[in-house]
Image (cartoon, rainbow, N blue to C red; front, side):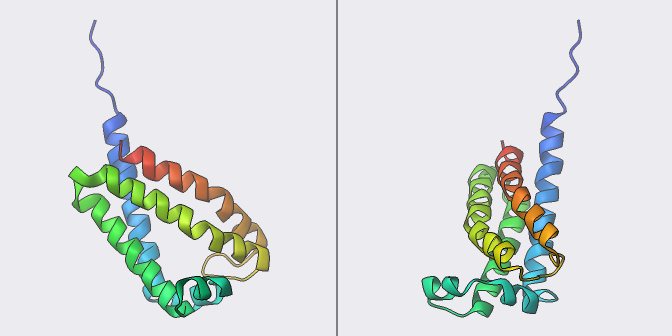
Length: 135
């Protein structure tokens, strides 16, 4: 009896590459074309908590996204730690996403209450994606 090799490693690799691409594109949007729109949705409490302004928060989150996305592909030996960091990042930004939905503030590609609500529902899937793809 012959067993077919598992496709799971290839699927996880494709999932990691797709997640890395998503993070890099999202990060670049925070640094360029979407920067102004993202400043609008940063909660006021975040600036007090982090002792900085909204633009700095947007830029920092963009830099983190680009770094995490790049590291996910460039550092395969550390992918477990990087996946955990990505999952933690997705958890960390969730309060801002919740605030955006509650206040109805638009951001790039999130210009309706429905889109903002769906984004909230996708956040746990992003966490699972980050953790699963690095196993």
